[in-house]
Image (cartoon, rainbow, N blue to C red; front, side, top):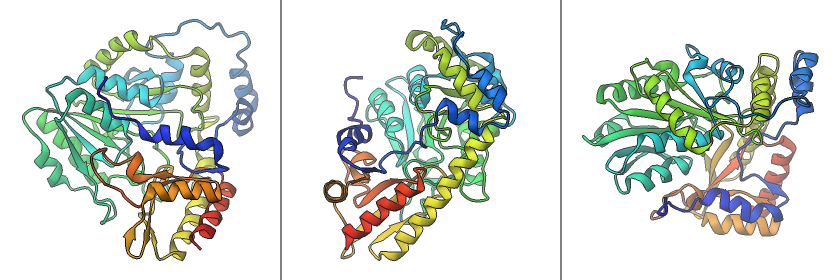
Length: 389
């Protein structure tokens, strides 16, 4: 993929995080240790025993992941079994595997926009200009237009790519829209890939199902996720593909032997225990509590400043906040650079890290982390408040 676009978000963080004291440019929950998992567990003795890996043989495990891991992953969904799961190297590995397995150069792809850059750039590197962007309306609470999506479908359309919950917006498609999209993909024989890495971080009473739960075995619906964003285990490089379509899973499984062969044995053990009934509810509750506190802090900040606006996140770990001056959006890259220089706060500029390279989209927007420790978020918002004067 020599023609792939520059991946600006991780480059921005790598370039600037070391000399910033308050980094809110990321999106992962604070990392958990083995001891943290034990302390959070409802059965500390069992968790401690399961995570005692001193005698674990570091062999190459099954290519699709251990049965125990796949069983625990399947428990995140209704109507999904271990046989519907393929373990991968993170969600990035899962998405890459799907794209490499199922797309070819003359295919047409429709991708939600904005979205995590990988979900736009890898398909584009494969199909070239045969990609259409289904834009969410940021001036109307990030509403999605189903008629617009329908109008984008061509005879060569192969795949629809969604990011739900959305990164960077923190919004989620309605249940009605989910059903409509699954039906649309079924009608046209399309593959539907949904990156659900921020599920189930839901911040209100609405808890929509996974897209895979709405699908049938004859559908080409695929969801991906991992241990990184919700579960605080980015360093355990475990992700997965979940689909009821046996042919798609088999094809991805086959290509996986050419790429990662298998996931790490120790990583599997840690991930399986974290997703067990002993640990999973407490981990999720801990991170949802962080998000609620941070959303309250951020809402107060937004309400205080006339030049600051947002679409309040209903899900996920990020908020997309717009800064304006005299009615016009600020230069978000310059804003973020000067904020880091003067106050030590690092945010992610929206136009650079989420806008298309040839466009000027999302000017004035910054992505802010809402599952960071609340004291860190509060300190950062106080520093931004001082910077704005």
